[in-house]
Image (tube, rainbow, N blue to C red; front, top):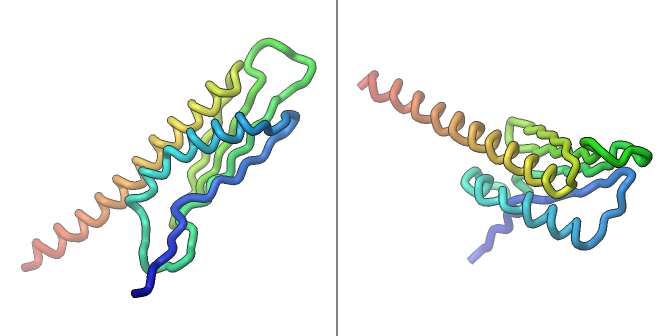
Length: 131
């Protein structure tokens, strides 16, 4: 029996003007990793050892001399088959910005998934009408 290795999601974290602590890394991986369940339905089993989605997360503190206002910026970019999803959030709290980015990515992935499903249904309806 041949087992197929398909890695669903790979998370790459980059920081700017900010240190990546273990707690921050774990929080990002936990929150962004929760999107894996939405990407799991898009898994293609014909590609062995391939990563289905790569997620690039960039976390930055916009300025060092300002201490109030929206100073944290989180950007994420997901590469899915045939589409790139980009989301961005600014907040005064780093963890709030990460959660906002996750929610925005979740909505975009659901739109992508339903658009793909709807396309298949339209094609099936067309073929059904011919018979």
